[in-house]
Image 1 (cartoon, protein in one colour):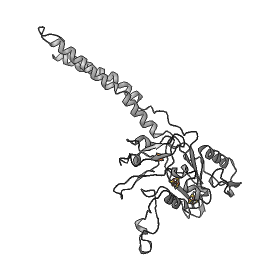
Image 2 (tube, protein in one colour; image 1 turned 45 degrees about the vertical axis):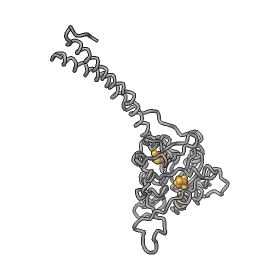
Image 3 (cartoon, helix red, strand yellow; image 1 turned 120 degrees about the vertical axis):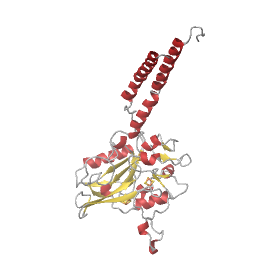
Image 4 (cartoon, protein in one colour; image 1 turned 90 degrees about the vertical axis):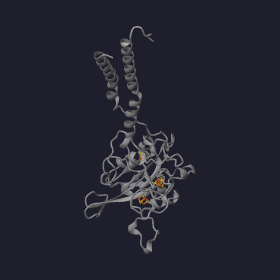
Length: 334
Ligand code: SF4
Ligand code: SF4
Ligand code: SF4
């Protein structure tokens, strides 16, 4: 190949690559459409203003899901040698945890300044879950009817992508177990299959943890937010529509917004609170589902694998043409 031909070759190949590479950059950031909550999905409302921090939901969750106690080293002493469950956060052994917000003198319930408040942390059962999106083997799945996000330990390879992919910091891995698996709330799906309600909602004495369909939960939230602070209100307990006696109290001063309604594309677990959600330690998450952004980029790139294929086709064509040009005339041309 002459010097000029080589230059031609490189120029042509560069043009071929550039021509096919432009659409990759232009389309790379287009997210795929976000997935929606199924119409008959189950949901949960956690109303922080009703929570008294009794932690009955934590104990019931442990029993219902056959989870071992989580004993922090500080609480290990002669009188408490593996006796009490004392989790401070979610872990491979704890699917649900009640935490406390404190400020200043911590005198006033559900007040940001000099107040305190409780918050319950567990899986939100997202509309478009990142844990599912990042799992390479399909160990996380979302039920098409109930919307419950479940985990299959038999499929899981222990890569822990879901731990890092969840925008709410929910899935946990038990490193103390040689066959460790992911732990996260699965909405007590085994109880729901028996016609029961999630254990945390069943035992909650005040109705702070309340079960119902997402539609019912949204209507209940609408009623609470529409009522004037101080107005008498009968807060349902257990399950919306249950015949158990309600918790007769008054409407509190709610902060603006419903956590879980829009975060990361929306979720089936929603929060109401009297202090800002960020103060309660709930992650500040954008509205766009991270799964839709990441998968949109991936699909765009995979789609445009046509680009490198076209570039290589351009290289092959130019190489073949130049070889043919430089071949002695007495050689047969293919
Ligand atoms: S909160 Fe996290 S673990 Fe739960 S469904 Fe959403 S992404 Fe998955
Ligand atoms: S729904 Fe079940 S697994 Fe989830 S936090 Fe409540 S009790 Fe625990
Ligand atoms: S059982 Fe109800 S009131 Fe008690 S800590 Fe749990 S959510 Fe709060």
